[in-house]
Length: 114
Length: 113
Image 1 (cartoon, rainbow over the protein chains, first blue to last red):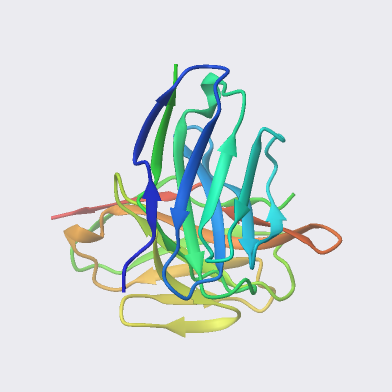
Image 2: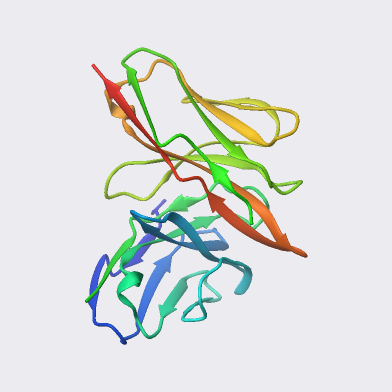
């Protein structure tokens, strides 16, 4: 069974631009979560989607948004990029959106904002 | 907000047992405690998950006390390939039914020959 895939793997953007990252979960997984990882802040939860609905949201500004499609694929969007948005963005999928957090992570998208 | 804390780093020698503890003082009543392993340039990899008492699988054990405010990941007989960063993950209620997933800060385990 194919793992979680994320595209693109690397991205360089300029301050003020916007970016869209894509995540394809493992087949049959209906829950997708997004995380931001930086050396200073570690792994931080962005949001979780289950059956096309946002179930949970972390403490990030409204510039960070996401959505999930009927085939469980998910996208996240960051508008008006800031230098501090440079990070590794990780997507994780799981079978369901229950309180069990056995998630499978993708390799991440490395975003650099200049 | 929930606060999840782990030791920053630990060193061990090959063949020894390693115990890494995570404190999570605001865990949600029905949430599970999950541990992940991460190697450089890779996404975290699921190791083990539990709700209470003790859970064991082929690679690790997880000990959770009755109050569930902490958990200990136990790696038996570590090898050089176990050198990685280990994270605990818990869910905590923020307000109402909204839940926030909180990773610990991670523990860099270095296994020495």
